Length: 525
Image 1 (spheres, one colour):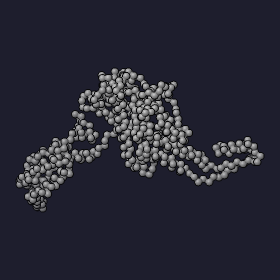
Image 2: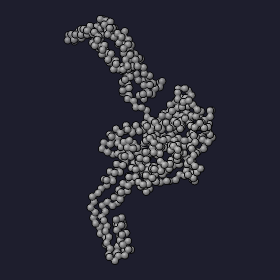
Image 3: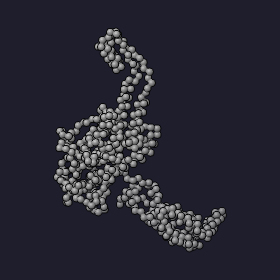
Image 4: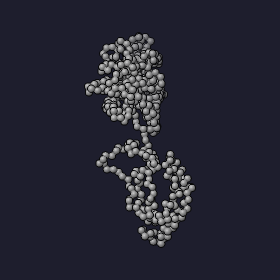
């Protein structure tokens, strides 16, 4: 196997890949401990956290982003929906070519991505949607004499810093200083929700202010609910009351609203003043809902599938298209990261450097209007369009039939009908691709047979020869159905059908007379 090099052209220490670089420790920097920032959050504190994240200290911001996913149920719901929707998409593996070796390599990759854990691992990689980036360590195992990822482990983003020179390259925190990530050991995903530095590209940065304002609203709402409808408790004490007596009275009027019981000295009184309730919870609720809708727009691109509004189901159906656009973008970005950091690495460790590598595609297959496709094929195949049967089966979602499986077949013309004397189709050129589907046609009646006999006796083929002369060549050169329609229309306008019309008129008149007289049209009838 050729020697493997990293992105900078340096040789890779393959033996070092078997050791985890960012395993958590009980002592040191990478400790799995809480670092809450949401408690006591103020506008001043939030502004400082956001500023420090750009200046080179993103730890507090990343901890706050994690807190928001736990404290704000709406944000957790819509962000989880977006990550779940993308991580649950179908995963396809395409070989670099039809060469047997490339197909074998693609099968090897396909075996890995079809693991049950892969969807959950993609969900963890999509942590970058909220925080702007994610770093997932590849844990390798070689027990089967091949390099295969045993797990793709999510690593806490607070364990990483950015290179101060570009603010983009991720470095791993360590007691000896920040360390570069080992090549062939990491999947680094930058979610491009917006352009700019990775730390500023996540959804969480825009949500922070909505989260702060909503926390104020919820706190005020809780205070309002606690005091709503309760009367004012007014305590009165005499002029000679001591400070201790005043404290007793204050505790009494404070607790009476909760305990509904209190004792005070006889020299003191407590009055209840009925509150004139004019306010309501509508202000708090509408403000909280407004902030939630803004978060929905940022995360999902719409609000129709998250809010119970009038016509919400129908609106949600319309807005689903917007969400599909975001889903498609997320899936393409995720596919690019997986191909760059995982698939190429997996192939190089097992097969050496290759000219081309198999590709992983995450996403839904392109939607096809089956009715329109079939309609166009039915129109164009008779005009010479060549369509593979397997291609059509793939497009409409039908598998190839088994050898012993019963096959559905269309009704075809009976041989007896087509071989009758005087058949007007006798001697005509077979349709292009005539081995394809043949439509059933009702049996011919006496009038059909009479018309056919009259046409055959008078040489209808010679009569129509000038009309159809050169028509087939023009149709074969047509580029669309509309071109064919134009060709036929021009031919009908220029052709001389007077003799044919006269023959058909005579046949029709003969049929009318026979019907009026109650006689058969012909001997065969």
